[in-house]
Image (cartoon, rainbow, N blue to C red):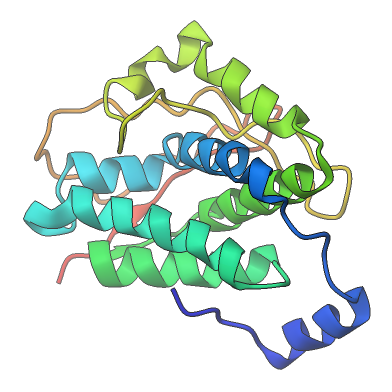
Length: 203
């Protein structure tokens, strides 16, 4: 997946002076956490369940996850706003979905937070994701997972400027192939601030 770095992002990278690299031994932990995050993203779950990307919706979702993980490995600097733009572009091009909420940014922030933790040996974010995946409140999401493994949740809060986390209330159950409603009521934001609501654009 091509990185969408802007001049401002390049300037931030120059000031930052580089990030702590991810130790090879920490890759499995990062990839596990990334999968847990994606499996709790309602927009992506609905895109697969309801076939927004056609018969290849599942393959497209898997490719998105692989590309995002590759984005972290291929770039030396990682900014949530850059990743947000890529997520929005892929959801539009592959699933004809114009996301009207801020879920792509929240997902991007959760992934960047997970990455930084794995780079420094802090696995507290991964532990929160695992705990949320084992919470009975998330059991319904597990029934429609995008790839192999348990369903997860974007959870926890960031100590930096990207102070967004996840919620356990991201039920994605629904009959396969059902058309999504044109609009949904205003979301109920829980204490973690993570609610994913979107509208599909028909072409």
